[in-house]
Image 1 (cartoon, rainbow, N blue to C red):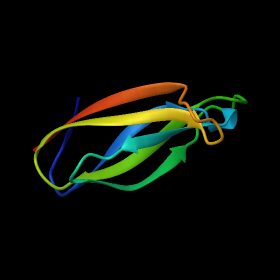
Image 2 (spheres, rainbow, N blue to C red):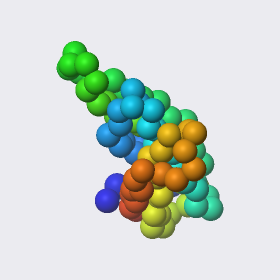
Image 3 (spheres, rainbow, N blue to C red):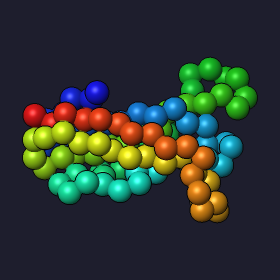
Length: 91
């Protein structure tokens, strides 16, 4: 479980390999949660096809427990290949 402070940005990191066409998306932001942006951090190894990390920067307006839903999908496919729930405790 991640810990965050209300009103301050926090990050969620998910393993990703965008060369496959798959990318993580925030399925829906709960009330009071703002997606500030996202970026991909490449792997440190030079191995072709190695995965990296997709980083989401978010901010919660108030304290409480959040369940953030992410989906891994290709932009042209309607159904996600995978779903991930990240629990966050905002103080």
